[in-house]
Length: 245
Image (tube, rainbow, N blue to C red):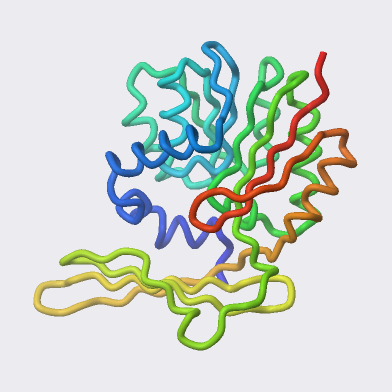
């Protein structure tokens, strides 16, 4: 089975923005999500976007005046963001998620980890390591916002495990989920039109089954105040706030 980085490099990276509905829709969705989540965006604030993908959230933050560090381990997606960011105050970093701290010149007012990014990490221990890094780098009163799918809820059964993602005249992307004790194996099936026929590309990678309440406990042990709620599309939302000055 591929790692999540291998999976994105080989299959999902080249179609990631298409999967979100192309760039204008991806950017509009990111703007709406940040507004719905009541993300604090002050001009000049330093924000970190972990698992930025092709950078829709990073661009939406920078449009509001934030200085953004956009972090991902897929170079192709960061190249897309570099082509689109223009003069916006966005710096890209190709790294694993905890590596962002070495690039910060000052504490961050905001750290985002949206869209199920957290479940891509290798183990719960790596999640705890990331949380410790974030806790050390947040400014007083700074916020750490996480959205993720709660794969610890009852597993999907039978044909419900087949999830259509997006299709058009030339591409069809379908996802199949296979549940284990600690992980969900995600199988992505991409069909590409080739002349009069179709070519099938298949790749799989693991996602962690992380219990949101446990994530809150880890953050609280690090001195952060947490709120657990719901975001759009059935995602769990965790808002963690550093102690004030």
